[in-house]
Image 1 (cartoon, rainbow, N blue to C red):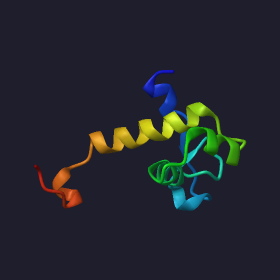
Image 2: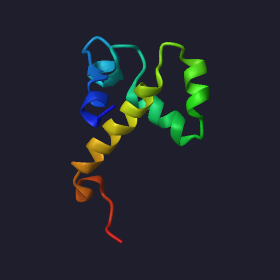
Image 3: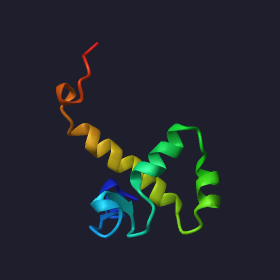
Image 4: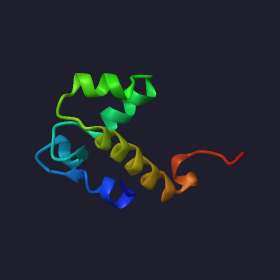
Length: 82
């Protein structure tokens, strides 16, 4: 699945989480998926804990994060170049 197709899985709904990015209109936020992955939760655990989630949804969250970071200004984040 191409990145553009993955990103189509990320949606925004003003009625869900104040229009934060979510997965396919579900009450599963991109932020939560990324947070759980950063804590070491595996893809298998995510899929088990959230039966509506599909493997491509996890990849879509990562693709979304990459797209955001690729367009982010480092100075805005308060980070310093190495």
